[in-house]
Structure formats: C-alpha cells, structure tokens
Amino acid sequence: MRLLAAVLMLAPVAAVAAECRDTTFEGASYTVCEVQAGEDLRLFHSGPDGAYGSFRNVDEALGAEGGALGFAMNAGMYHRDLAPVGLYVEDGVEVSKLVTRDGPGNFGLLPNGVFCIGEGFRVVESRSFKKTRPECRYATQSGPMLVIKGKLHPKILPGSDSTFVRNGVGVSEDGQRAVFVISNDAVNFHAFARFFRDELGLPDALYFDGNISRLYAPQLNRHDGGFPMGPIVGTVVPRG
Image (cartoon, rainbow, N blue to C red; front, side, top):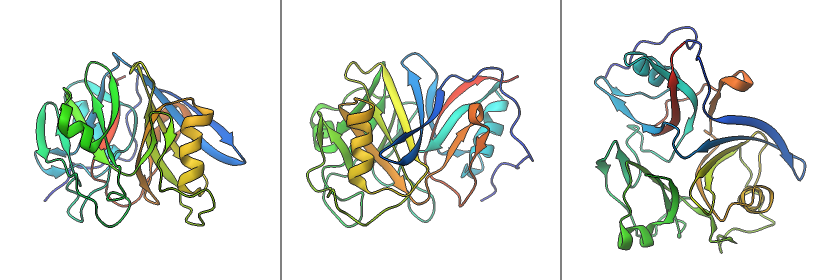
C-alpha cells in the first residue's frame, strides 16, 4: 500500500480553529486543544492509497479540497495494519463495528466508550451507545473511559506506577465543547482522569492511547512524529 507522498513541511494554515495551550496540573505538563461545536472537526483514517498514517499525509489530502489541518491528534487504538479497534465511523460510513465485550489491554478495561461527532460532541459508554445509537457523522471507540458522568473509572488506581505520555478527549455537559489533551510528562490513569474532571471540569472523558500519543498544533509550533497512526482526529481550516 502506498501512502500519500510526504512533504518536508506542512503548508501554512490561514486560521487555526482549535485553541491550544500548555498548562500544568499537580506538577505535570499537559497540552490542551479545545474545539467548539460548529467547527469542522473530522476523523481521518484512509484515502485512495490506504491508511494515511500521519498528520502530514492527512494535511496533503485536505489540500486537494483547499483545506488544511488546524489541529490533530491520534484518536483511538488500532491493529498492526492500522485498522481501528472497535467502532469507527467516518463521514457517516461505519468502517468497523462496535465492540462491547471485555478483554485484554486498556481497550478492554470496561467501561470503555465512544467519542461521537454529530450536531455537537458526546462521549458515551459503549454499552449505552449500543442501546441508544446516537447519530454520529464521525465516531471512534477507545478505552477505558476516564470520567463517566463526573465519576472516575472504577478500576483506575491513584497509586499506580504505570505511567506513560497519554492522550484523550473530554466533552462539556452541553456537548458544545470537545477538549483534547495530551500529557507532556508520563502520568498514570488516575492523574490523567482527574485532570479532565478536576482541572477542566468535564463530566465525561475517554482515553485514546498512551506512549504513542502525538499532537499537531501549529499554534504551538508542534508537529509530533513517530510510528504510523490509525485513526486521527483534527479540525479542517482554509489553506493559506
């Protein structure tokens, strides 16, 4: 499979939709990017030549329609061939199905959940999602849930020594804000979840991944590289 040709640098963007900032919480550094409902937020996985795999390839593909990435991060777990783990919906098309059984690894640490982009934003526990099937133009499943209706995931431990750079998304109660977070220091699940709940005041939050977590934030002159990614979430802005 041939990926889209890479360029040395991403083309400059005329405007950046997401507001990104660096902050600290309990001595650890985080980067926060906030998107408002109505902004052009999408999920990306594949083009005509296969999985995009990188922010650069998504940005190049958007250039064909006069767009560019305003902000982006990896958005869920994936198999070795970069196929999404669990539910993945792109532009109204279900690419892979919802998984509700428990299992190994972080994804199977129930409850896990789905990040849904529709008229607004939602983070929904996976089994509740199966019952209600909310309308999502884009959706990605991941796990575990970090915050569920204001409460931390019951299985994450405050004293855990399992620390990684981690990323995820939280949604405001009214569904009008999606807040994407990446830790710049290694943190455990408990600290990461409390950042969403206690520092950002978000009632629902979902873990995307750890260790391979990456961010593209031109406001901060940041473009993380690394191994090829599966699902990617990002805003689309006019190309400058």
